[in-house]
Length: 629
Image (cartoon, rainbow, N blue to C red; front, side, top):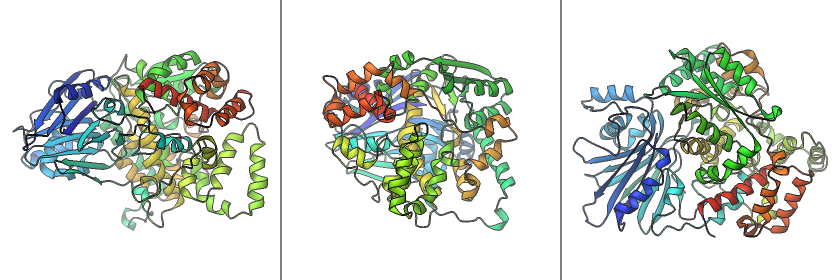
């Protein structure tokens, strides 16, 4: 796990520029630094590769940039290749000789053996840049689901790249102004759908894509598409699972994945939330660990929002070395500016901050953790998966019934209005391009237009990942695919990377293993979503491992008392940053509408916590990064 950065093209004072790019990701790799500059044959252009190392595997000989045996290839790599042992044996059988035990060298030899198709052989999380001197080309690639980030900028024919957006802001000639065009999507989605970013001159390399740069320019192609984009087809009878055998196969696949992801030459542990996902990972880690697993949990002083009792239950069950962090509203408020700086985007999810604080605490004891991220988006763990398949039938209800009875009824239920209103609003949207983000989003398209004067543009073009599913794909698979290609890489996985790496901590996510996801996708819809019960096959798979209390308790999620904090301890902060003199956010939006939303929340009339939290953190992030309009 590391930070990478570099450029390809014509760059004045390349040594200084490369050092600045590399230093900007120093927090990702405090254990070492390396740089190399390679001149092109034309004598004008050059390629610069920079690396900051967080040493996890092969502590002695794994430094980067790593060169091929003859120096013709140069590689910088961020991530982990979990099947590097099997690939090493396969490559040795093909005649390759190795000089280190690192997965970085395996990647170099994989490219020599299979060229760009080497990515198809990799099981893990990765973003890398590989300079091929003889072919005068730079290959840049990103893993299947976007666990590891990669940002790109093109300035007058020169390509720059980095693990984090912030590293590129000082690149010579970059348009580093705030990208106002993404504001409407941010208000709709609660994040900016890739490949766009908040900075005009910077974009993301999408998950499952690779880019080739030569002196003639850049070409980009997609090398992986999640299987949920395609209709489910029953496997041949000889290979078809029964529900019982499928649960056993899934448990075995998860156990194998956890074992592979426990490879480390440094101390490691696990984030434990007390839910089924992280608890299952801890259980599987305990099965193959000779020493007690280190576990780390975070809770809040408000008992209604703290799940530490469930964390302790799991920790006691598996005899872990358990650590707990209790945080207060003041801890949250104090951490916000620094967390906002590292997030590379506004902190739209309040849970980002506790993860950042927990990462700092965990880093005092370990350098790597396993976490349960991604399970909901693979095994249908959210309530929206229950409702989405019925959207078409809901929309066929008489307009009078939908608009004048159900919607008004939903808004008059104080305790449940938030969730029920989301269901009613989402189900009533006929276009998937509007309905999919609405499930987790902040505002409807109409509310976005009222607040910022712009209607969210259509993202359903052929190049847009979230909606390019094949005809005949089920409603469940369509919404899972949306989450796997948008919600996950552009929000949750991005959060997981930034908040842990800000503390110099590596996070590995077994549920994001592409072979685990492929197995889940091979099951009929009813095995993942059984009636109204999500994660059905996962629960059956881990039932022999976990207490029934953990498996069968209602899903809570990582909730926080944000609604109350915004009205109380953070009230002045909201007023100053959103409505005060010098507020960038107030200048982007219709001030009278913004002021009304703030008043509605502070008076308790309407719960606007999602919107106010998003806008508060947009203001904090713009100030932290010093962005101009």
